[in-house]
Length: 108
Image (cartoon, rainbow, N blue to C red; front, top):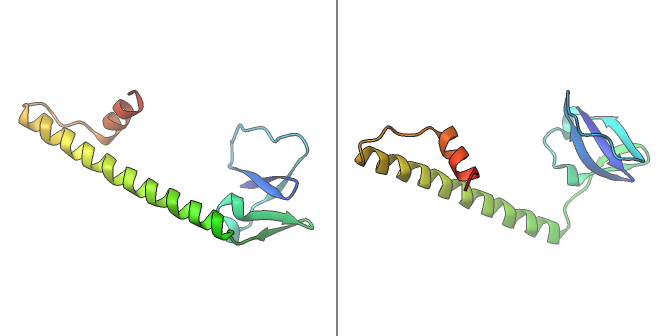
């Protein structure tokens, strides 16, 4: 995997076969194993070295809010999926798969 930097900011994590073109003026560096699980917005290129920086308090609060929202949406989605299948069983229909439910929600 490679990291693409514009200036000192990491803008993309390229995986093998990724078709995303590198932006003009960007710099690509092979990713190190210790940075694989770190959000790209915490990776900076300083003096040619990839450095992990801490979130500011505002960034951390925004990340915590997004994480909470994502968790709630995931739980609501699972609940709706279970309710849909319960209703289908009561109607004498076959249950749907998670992939079918995801497609149906995406097409709303």
